Length: 224
Image (cartoon, rainbow, N blue to C red; front, side, top):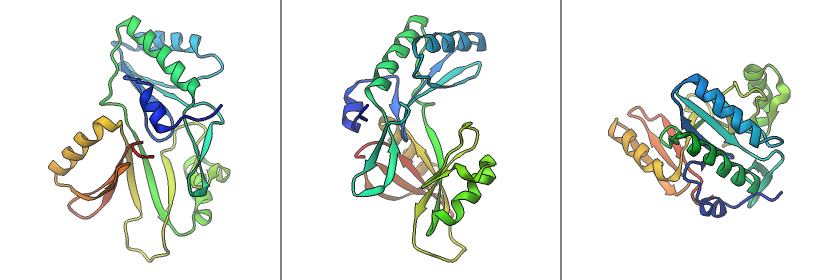
């Protein structure tokens, strides 16, 4: 099935959900772990064959939707192949939101974000297998340009192409994926806490620096 454009995803009007890095994400608040389990069971009953990724606690249920095998190539970068959202994901998101509404569960957009690590390198192939082996126990889990953990326990790690350079230099940085509407508030909070906006020339990400010059990015799907 064809992946959807960013505009098509935005036009779907999914108020409970946001596309972050690649998938649709939502968090619903619950009053107990038993309620979380019951809600997850209902989700399982309507999503057979398109199983969402689910994480539960006594206070929330996180869901991630991504059609298996749905990919697109970044324009101008044939080497960059990304997973993305299809109409199947949109339809299932609507059904899950309806289940949540019937249970009186509220979506929590403030808690709906995804953090990943980026590592600058001039040669990802040289170091990618090492990081895959370290984080997952299997070097084969390096899939250019990222480490893929089938269990979902390892932090997301991707490799950013850069020119060769000598240490010391910051090479690791956090990318924090957020809903478009919430990104400005997070940027404002980081600046108020002593940070500086280093680069906001691209609408899809804003580079921030702490007081010692360490950088991080607030990322959204705007303009991608």
